[in-house]
Length: 223
Image (cartoon, rainbow, N blue to C red; front, side, top):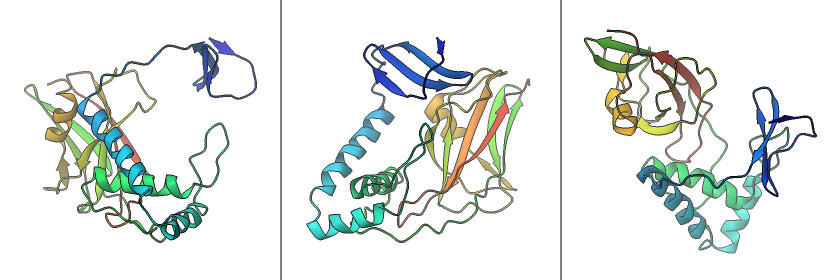
């Protein structure tokens, strides 16, 4: 239910508060489902592994990460944010590197220096029932563009739903990168009328930094 109260987020007793589209929402707490998909298990194992690895660093190495973390703010929540700890920065960067199959780092990197995102649009076609998803790429995305996507949603949805990593952007052919196989492997084939959201951003394979995401959305058309 919608409530009028001071801004708040999280669990308090048997209730959970969060910011909804139309204001502050409060609902009863329920234990969330835990399907333990392969993706979930891999991500959790990666985070656990990096957390354990941080404890193996020398005191000097941990101090270096702590000093570096103070230069970067956490993502704002309810209008509040703060500097990262060394542990948070270490886990954040190395989790990205592990997810993208890159070597881990033990020393904090310098500030991010990322290029522009190559994909500029999402185009979905339906040729006699064969659906293809392609990213328009005026320039070559190289090997360092991460592609995330949502499962198919209703055509009425406009807010970006939760997205999952599909992989890196494939090399373009005639100005388009075909992500159909990546998408189908993760979510299965969408059908006519479905809406799909795709997010793209650049990452640094040597440091784990990620740039801002560009979001695209399109409907699966009729054949």
